[in-house]
Length: 550
Image (cartoon, rainbow, N blue to C red):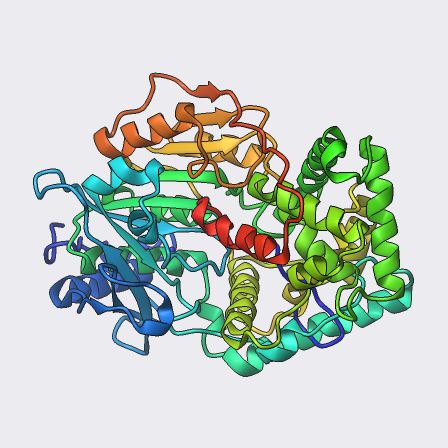
């Protein structure tokens, strides 16, 4: 699940074969037995059959996509509404790189989703071109396939506000000082929801996780694969769980990493409240690490001292935004990468340390907007639009402001780091101008093979209980736990206990006889003195490389 945007004064912050690769639809009248609806099940079978017949016209990727040869790109056409498979269509951007081994070693395509909702998977094949050692064995056996989900990026995309307005800073402090502050934020949330309806209303009712799962099945068919090999991280785990529920007999390999709790009562309001608690825990872990490395950073030699420095920084930025653009909201946008990802620990600490030493440039460039980066700003706004659209469409959200206010006020008292910013980010769902559905009852159906679940115990974005819950629901699954660690996205980190099991599963289909607990991966080491904003931006880019949501 992604957390990168905050609201502010300028606006918003997945009978026999019909054809190779496509499987038959259920018979008419099977609506009560068909998860997600019989009409949609028939529709996806029709769409998959068409896609299998047409295939994908692979070409060199457009220059501005940043995906050099031998990566290839193409499009897959899918229905906007699977209940109307011959109606309006949208396009999905896909890319691939062929397996590096021999033809006899090839096991098909490995489709990847990094999470979000709203994350692009198109950079997945670059794990091969950059010779990432963790993926050398697997890339011999699989074509690596990425895609932009519906609404995202180079697929038929949605938008809720003008991208340049979206990134303007400074935004309002997410922590309200008064009822008046709350009223302003509520107004901004209503305006954001209205903007989504105005700019993208025709797609909003169809921006659901079940539809994205259906899209994946059509992509599978277009690739010529009879069964799916899938790797999903963060929100991609929920997408994978929904796919396994809708298409259990289409699964060959399914691995999910850093798991969203799929319980109906968690999707999505309660899941976000749970996230607030977990973020505070991981924020405390990072503060302890900073204090332990005070000789390198000179921020504070105890977690309490580090917290005081944070509060001091926050207060100063509120009184006078740093560089004119970095207020509390922007600080949170940058600092929250530390509890998200271990790969950001040293960079965030060093940028902060440099600031305390009199260099504010690195912090401004890392936390402030780049108004000249129009392509990046478009991608940022689009990612938040898709995040909002999917979570608002998947489930019915509370419409009572009293409930939102009560729940978040209570949480903020003990878990102040993320709570209010999280609330404002999700509040558009309270006044959403499009249909809101009922979450699918995720669970294994007959025919689902063994699946692999990987999770760290102290994950901030997707608390550990989510992995336990999905494990219960996917019979025959195995849970690999990285105990004592908390980086969001585990399979992309160096930990042989995890890495070897991922390879064994993807290459041989084997899992341990019982669940496994691994020791944590190596603790980060302090960055070299003088880390710059360039390093901070590199840490942001490293999130995807580490198999995590942007």
